[in-house]
Image (cartoon, rainbow, N blue to C red; front, side, top):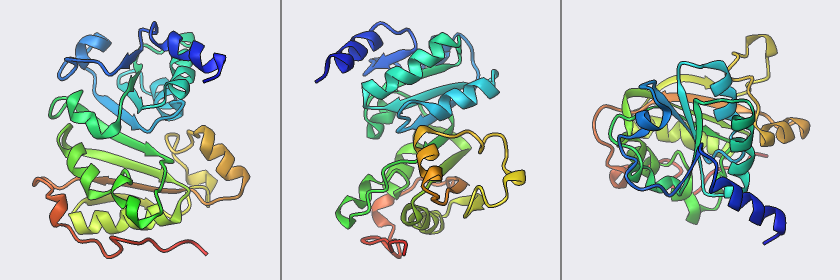
Length: 235
């Protein structure tokens, strides 16, 4: 590991806005932020571009970027500290362990921004919009909370559309090309991640889905998807 990475790992150990595999945090996020404002998660946040962007826009909400890679978290956490964004924090852990860190109903919203689409059929259950993950999110979200997916992957976009239908989610918004009409882009969708900027430079299409989970518990093992084992690749 390079010296720069080693230094960043050492830095985040001291950052007050970074929690690394914390114990006993379930139900304690109000104490961490010092308020009872709603909590939004950015999953697989990388440098935390969306957590930071939303934190700048909505001072009345709290935002937590979740990722395993401490080197990337360092950048977002350092920016939040430099800008004195007290409503932005970072949690270093695996996403499939969310219920170890949040109590039922402790999360008000989830953003999934440009995650790995895991296109190989054998990796389908690693997709962050797979029913397996939706069942996990259901354990920490307040009823009626929204989940947002922003992606350049046509395959993940189509897969998630199928999941929304198969699981019985409530589809709120479906945009096949976010930048097709720039005048209609909402301020929230104008936030760009590092990877989004790269994708736009490569002339890739950016897609967006917003939906809610069903009220009944999700039995993800019983759900059969039209393209459960494969996804159609974009031509």
